[in-house]
Length: 247
Image 1 (tube, helix red, strand yellow):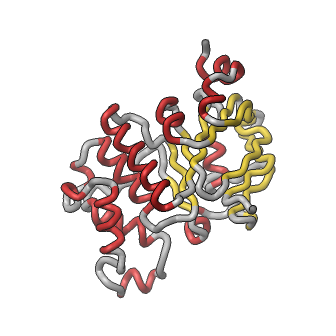
Image 2 (spheres, helix red, strand yellow):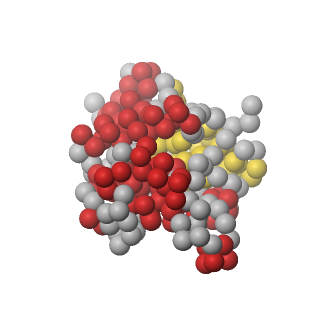
């Protein structure tokens, strides 16, 4: 079976500094893959090489068997790839509903259809469903900038799933939110995965969040893949304990 995402011997150097050093892994349909590692381990650089923000120094990236190494983010959008960033990408002056509609437009239609089509771009019903699913109904008409940080993180995640993408990459979705909202976000992501068989990859510093959410975990250290396995095994791996947990 062809993997949704294949990363083969990916390498990224900045001058003499090697940020990602020969990393290879696959992501299969319906999987939630977690990528963890200490600060400076190369996680975000790896994500950005996969998603076209950075050009890899070597190696190959494939989406559904198609080589996409160095492809622009807009081209990856058309292939059904979506992402979130460490820094929120919501539009603070727009309502929650309009943020979702705008996110959906990135994955469909032409410039002409956006200019001359329906005001909601035909995405009103899909936005309403996403609002309900992520428990944002009471905030649907609120400006995104007036939401709490945790609510904005929830909206950011909903925006990434808005167009029903083939693959979603979430960059530190739990960063900076309180434990109550953290549990809510994890529960919604798990529910989305269960109901829609979604495939996504999560980079995250919050160890418990990854271990509770992901079906498989990769561990990076100094740009290299040092461990891979089920959360239960990763917790007890002495190499991971030394490199990541520091005790």
